[in-house]
Image 1 (cartoon, rainbow, N blue to C red):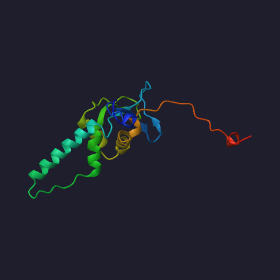
Image 2 (image 1 turned 180 degrees about the vertical axis):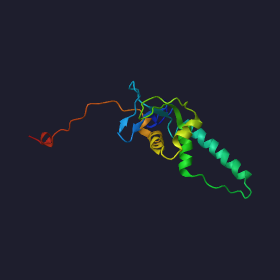
Image 3 (image 1 turned 60 degrees about the vertical axis):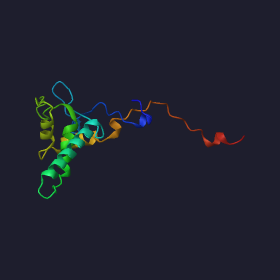
Image 4 (image 1 turned 90 degrees about the horizontal axis):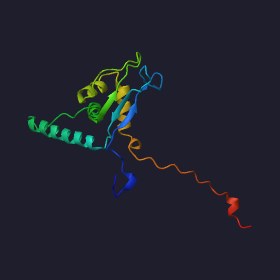
Amino acid sequence: MSNKFGSLVADVAKPFRVELIDPSTEDVIRDKAGRAAYIDVWAADGEQARQFGRQKRKDLNLRIKQSRNGKVEPDDALDANIAMCAALTADWYLVDRLSREPLDVPCTLENAADLYSPPGMGWIFVQAWSEANNAANFLQKPPTISPITPTPSSELLPK
């Protein structure tokens, strides 16, 4: 990642893995073999999000041109966020939280929208959406350096 702003730039070239947490137990959902359920999401300010935004603007311009009065009803903010989260969903491994059986649902844009949209599915949407919007997930971690021990002020006094 070569950039004049160095490590201030997040690495949005790869998705972040969100292990799904069961809100009733606060544990990661796992299949019977112990494999974690997950959703891989792209960064909300990455190229996938920008492509989604460009397409959304094109669609809006087309809707305005096709309307009778040049006005279009605004999209619902939650629906817009769900659509964007679906576009940011790169892959998943879904597991039924009670039976612990894998769910054989391919990761597609349409299926991701179906996963996040219905009432009662907000707990999954919130996990994917919040992690896609968390810059810390895409920033390079600083090297671990042993902490600097402060010098006691008594050692600084002249003897």
